[in-house]
Amino acid sequence: MTDRDPYTPGPASGAEVRKDGEKWTLILVGELHHAPEKVWHALTDPAHLREWAPFEADGSLGTVGSTAKLTWAGTRQVTETRVTRADAPKVLEYNDMRWELEAYGGGTRLRLWHSIDRRFISWGAAGWHICFDVLDRLLSGTPIGRIAGPDALKFGGWQRLNGEYAKQFGVETPGWPPQAAQKS
Image (cartoon, rainbow, N blue to C red):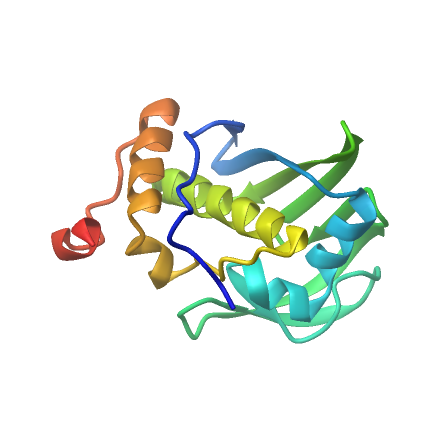
């Protein structure tokens, strides 16, 4: 059971962008109210990923050398991935993502480093911001359901965050989705 009605994402915060040559990296930081071990499990277990992440994995991401197919929400895009680092519960790396977990104030400071096309930096920041919120609520036992992929684009909170992050990063928002989707 989920209850999305009272959920409104907070303001755009905790994100930065770094450029190295032609490569752009989005760095998003969130503070979760749960121990690093619990967050680690949610980052690596396919059943948990299905509940909050913008992709599903067909295998565990918790062991160096393990492979999985990531299917991105609402698409047919499948990415083969191989875990290149898994230092539980501190650092997880696969494909173009690096997760860092740090015990902080009774919970976890979670950092995501994600290589991303410059044109979609604000989209990615808005999407991951919401995913972090969904993850925190899932781990608290008050799930609101995954808000990712095309579903996120229709969510008013995503639209606001996309604009706020675009302004923060000094980028233009892409001309998509259509106006009708932006108003729903």
